[in-house]
Length: 409
Ligand SMILES: [Zn+2]
Image: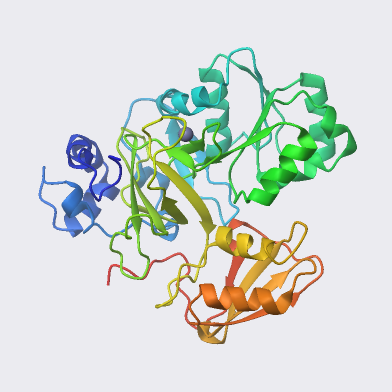
């Protein structure tokens, strides 16, 4: 496997080629200077000295400070805002064409073809991810139906009208669509989900009710989507390693995670993106699978474990929403929504679940997973649901980090 800063044979070469462009943007040039990296000296070794960019750090600056001076007109787009105020970025059509082109292998692996009819169930107007979804379909010469941000009833009616065969949207929205009686008759062949955590139980729910295959996609507004997507094996998402450099780091130390361990994804764009990322601290917990995929692709695979805050208490395993969900599934029959709250300055973890589970055995197993570093209590709460992808874990410690990583110290 030739990905990632640790052991990525080509990483230094790619970084070196991309350095002049990064230096042309003051926001990035300042970060390289602060890290003491001399002109022409950027490689994978010294990259780790660069202080990570955070969502808060980006929001504290004007979008014009973070983009390349280009004669090409751009569109001003924002992140989804699911984790607060949207962050603003300039995007050029060159960016969107680039996204359409480099993500082509991901769609080809799924057999998406010009005979398909695409549909996007997301706000398109000013959202990075919506525009990227559109670019993906257009690249394949596929007609695309923009549903916008409508209710499941309206989406269903529109989808029946357009005859869409490939639909892109949020996992929970698609699950909601599937709960409508007439959804089973839609001509959908595949759905591509992203923007939130896809658990295996949500996937099964979508596939059963919509009678099609559900594939997981990963992306983020600060870079683009999809940076990674599942193949027909549905076993980890193939990552476009030569387009955006991925570091997987231990959030408590800032050092690379051990191979195969869960860590936080930190991204550096390797192409001339109008608003580039230089060590963007995503907050997303990912794991790099170590085995080759049965599909034969040599692109590495990642698993997205959710976006969590407050996972950095020492001695504890990262509190992965995906793993918590799989533990909960062993103690319940149906689909259980949950949220986690860190109490007492991190000494205890309350698990609020939406339906009946074996509370004692669940608390025991979670406590064991967390190596006894925190006390675990399970609480049934009617109507519990996650408010946004970042709110899986509510951190009530006296001192919290927000989205500012503790490292480098
Ligand atoms: Zn594969």
